[in-house]
Length: 140
Image 1: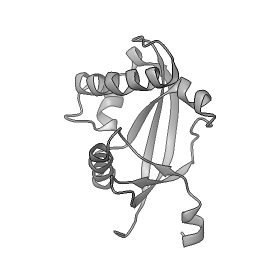
Image 2: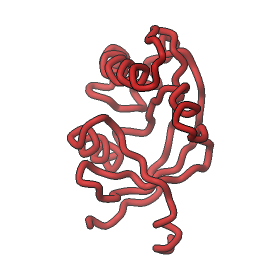
Image 3: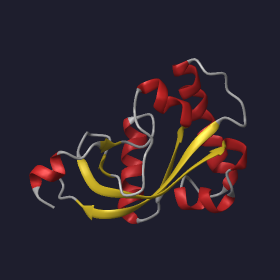
Image 4: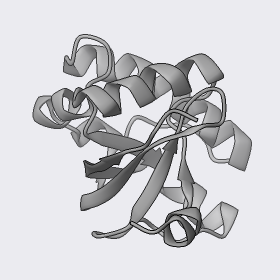
């Protein structure tokens, strides 16, 4: 991919802290992380389009460096409490279990709900994206 085209790709950061960004970036590079979850209502609140199949972005680590290019392979919208163990395993958080996935995502989604003024509930709509690693970028 040409440098000018790559520079036009948006950034993706996973997690709420630089430490989360680093861990998740490493998990993307190793193949452990192949999905991400976000609050559906946040897209409209932030004036951003929903992700779409084929969308590419640069994964940024906790130091702001682009470390990979990923491409969205599926997008689904579901209630939080309807997300299953198969998806949790693909997302790769912690031990890959649904209970771990729920625990870390409740914290994240509650913070997102508070940020946009939406009451938290266990059936809040979430966007489930799976992606593939397209390219590992040289350490910069």
